[in-house]
Image (tube, rainbow, N blue to C red):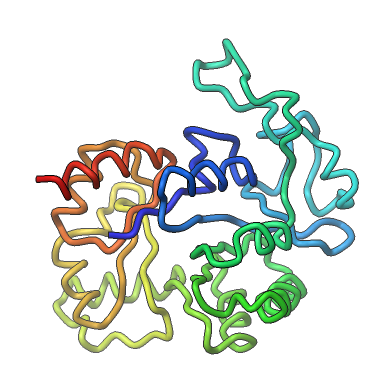
Length: 257
């Protein structure tokens, strides 16, 4: 069972930061999940939201800011565990990292990387970086934008990818009618939520059918221990969580039983 820290474990530390990644790995997490955007000057930075307002002391869109402007922001500014009574990570020098910094800091750590922008240039730069830093293995790449995923697969055909939105939908429908054996995709994994709206995507049958096709099933974002336990019992291959400590405690307990 693969334990992955969602954005580094944003329930415990500032999202998508080197600080979070380092602490998640110290706990014993197996892999890191992160997202990428591009700055105005074309540098790939690790960030989920297209704007900086949500987690920093600044405002504006990532694509409108230079790397120098982005690096001046406090990436721990808004993090709070007590609904805004305290902000323990303010002023600690935590910044938004570049993808290069992540590759340099964690050269052998398995990564799940989500391409956020729809700009084709981002895919080209990202593909070049994977080669430059020898990260063609121990990485799974995904995107909610099917055209971006297709572009990436053309540029890096040997790199593992997660199923895109349309691929996941197609598998779900085929499986519904017990026709999943006809599913074909270059994807190596489903990295999906248990629910999409009111629709339950992940079921024991979905997992069995995916495994029959040689596909992993990793579920996000699972934060309650009871849900983690149920999904593990169903046979998922991985859990992606905001709370790495909870998941690791549960896994240690299961292994000790």
